Length: 311
Image (cartoon, rainbow, N blue to C red; front, side):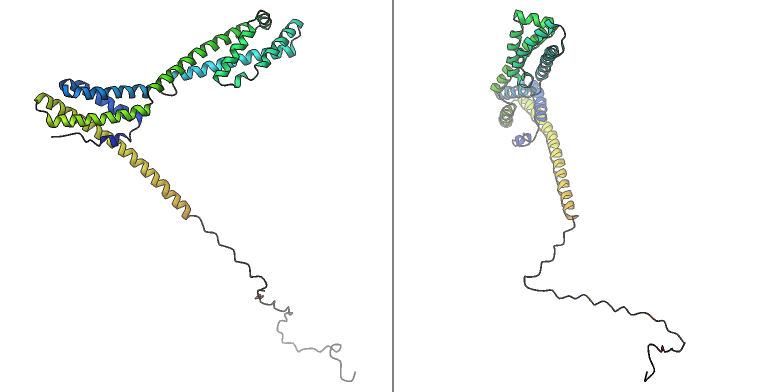
């Protein structure tokens, strides 16, 4: 009689979230077809299925979601329009020739200076500043000035982008809060592994006590499928761990080779003790005598060098 190894959860702890999800997705798809023939297994299986579904939802709620990308896009667009209108006001205030345009730009410039740091703010601060700026620009006198500078459409677009951003950002915050309240992926992973361990114990216990042929056949199919599937994922884990171990050993061997290839430095000679004098062992230089090659001619006396006696 084959049973399921109750220590499989130890192997499962080494699986990544993606591997763990795929493994239990396969088990759920198979057991959904077999558990109907085993009424005594239904309660334990339903608890396991609930935890798998919770892990599934949490796992798919990735951090870099499509909403996050949309939020970043909207924020960039509203920031760009803010700078566009801001530059238009500054340029008109500095370079405009028409007196009415220059006067309108000067009045608007005072408003934009109040919100000068808006593009560098975080999402919430940026939203608040743009909302207040739009309210100022929509006042009749300022709206006329904006129109004179030809920036009415840009201001309207900036207002709508700010509204769209706040709506999406708020909804995303609510979704994240709900996800956190429902449980993190790590929490669901722990619950799934725990409930799976309980399910394995129940299946093994039922197989030992089962007497009905249909129930025995369904349990054997489930046991064989779980053992075969988990065995394959055990191979995956062992292969990954072996590769990681081999890579680590290779790095350690390389570090040892690098250390062995370094030539040890020769320590300098210690200085002589104070008050001692080292003897000078340098050999003296040979005297510099002129070299006279041998000759057969008799030596001639120089009378100036060797005077005759008596002189």
